[in-house]
Amino acid sequence: MSLWEYANPVKFLRLSERVLPWLWGLSAVCLVVGLVWGFFFTPDDFRQGSTVKIIYLHVPSALMAINAWFMMLVASLIWIVRRHHVSALAARAAAPVGVVMTLIALFTGAIWGQPMWGTWWAWDPRLTSFLILFLFYLGYIALWEAIEDPDTAADLTSILCLVGTVFAVLSRYAVNFWNQGLHQGASLSLDKEENVADVFYQPLLLCIAGFVLLFFALVLYRTGTEIRVRRTRALIAREGKLA
Amino acid sequence: MPDLGKYADAVLSAYAVSIVLLVAIVGLSLWRGARVRADMRAVEERTRRDG
Image (cartoon, rainbow over all chains, first blue to last red; front, side, top):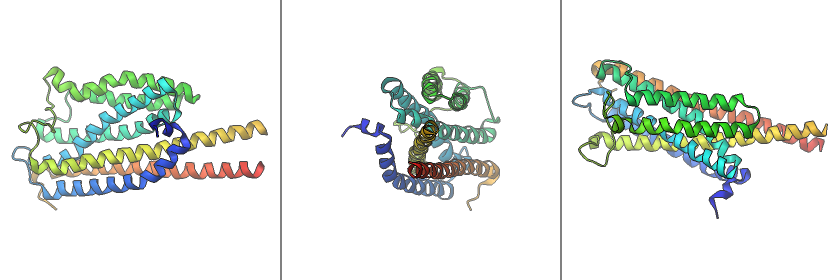
């Protein structure tokens, strides 16, 4: 069995119907347990006080904001190379989810930054590239909406996605590239010195799992919706031709 | 409720905004999905009936 079989919309829908209940359920469990654990049952940080609890929202959402764009990049490349409609629709379906993840990361970052850095916002390399990534998400969605022919829209949004990838990479690695600005390095690291303390690490991992599962659930569900929209339009067009 | 000290407003508003946004994207996705499914069924039914 090949992965490309799921480029067939019927097979894709059949698979997503089977997988989605598990994804919704697991994501809800991970998010509820992770957030309740983090909010109610972890101590304050000796420097950040209770604002450390924002980490359970900020880190997973920022991670997903960047990785959603990379998922869109892969789907766009598949569209460009193999012309599978489902992959173009999956990229389209992921964009609003990416916007929400980016918004959560920006909001929670600003809310955390005000008491910790003394400012809501700074034109720091990571923050700025993240804001530009957010604008790319909005532009990507607007471009899909603006073009009537779906294949042309898929072509042009795929190119936009390739260009926007620069800012997705910058959002992730800006701290390492410039080594300046307010934003600290990664909260999660294989280096024990850099990694967050174990007491915060375990609920954080659970929240990350919850965000990842929720992202996949939303993208699968929304891709199914886009497939059905396309089928409905095709049926209506056929009716029009017959009439 | 844990004692959030002087940062209570910051922490609670971060959770409130995030939960509202997450619920909104899930709710809107499910609502649109249900509407599209119903539209598609109606069109399929009509096509079948009219041949």
